[in-house]
Length: 471
Image 1 (tube, rainbow, N blue to C red):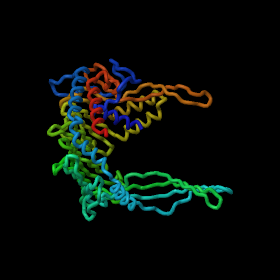
Image 2: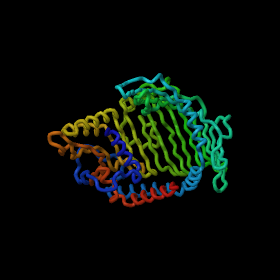
Image 3: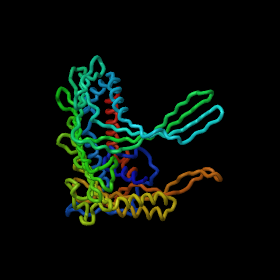
Image 4: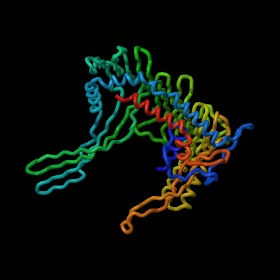
């Protein structure tokens, strides 16, 4: 569904150099000096602010992206990578058997196999069955203390309330990985697995084949709190804390129309911290997600999505325009968005009636061979979007992102005429600069030509991390 493409495009803008989608030529139209399609103009701002040219914006975006990339060098994780390499050399069969045994005991067979098809003749029999299972992953059941003895993990204590792994590295430093849970658990149906199995035999001069279609309901018992720590000689290296409030769920199914959810997560890796401080959902009322990535005292990235302004921290309110709180709230699937990179670049805006946007994009997909209908659907979707690019938390919109339609060529096969080309319409996210200098598709703008330094930094970063994890 093309709604996925929309949010993928937003991610490209948000991550700047880390998310560039085009590394070469693209079949989209080149940049143009003329405005096309719909989309909101840049505007607003405080007196004294002025529009930056496309070249000035490109320079600022590139410098910010390169600064962002430079803050997370592979060398920061060398110590952890070395430790994990040593752990991989240890024999873990005992741990695997222990874990598999606990998981196997949690699988319940839901009734007898159901015969759905059979076939027999004088020397062959075939049967197909449907089998249903239910498995529950309960972290509280995974308790025990393991230590390394003679190069392999040994369970040294099973009468404990946590899970702990202890070993010494090649420098005789003691590493301890520990996981513990607290509070009540809530079983939540997460997903289903579809598998198959086959067996055959030769019985009474006949080949007998049996085929099984297996359906497995997977349930995860989510604790109120989960804490995972990794220490080296009692010094914290990694810490993860997760808190979830799921008491409102009465069964195993999360009903988006009825159930509330509240959760938070905090991850610390040496000097880095990823904090999801606010995940809140109340049906037809409030929805919010707020995530921050920081290194030391520097906030690298903040992403906030909310149904009202209270869920957007450090919000540049004037950039959102007028919002009537009585009609804005999430009764129609409205959302506010703010992405902040190093306090220098902000992607901020709003989407009214998210469900309507999805419906319009789905209608456009179905009408992709009708130019007038397709363009009408995309223009309607744009009416619900207001996304802009800002710098240094000022309220002047320096660029606007919107959806633009483009004619494309496809091929299809018919029995009468074979492979035939045909014309259809598609859309791409487009960025239009506030000084009206030009507009461009995301792929054409965020390319190696415009951001050569960023592409070089990303390639070096990937190479260095690859070297770090190689055995």
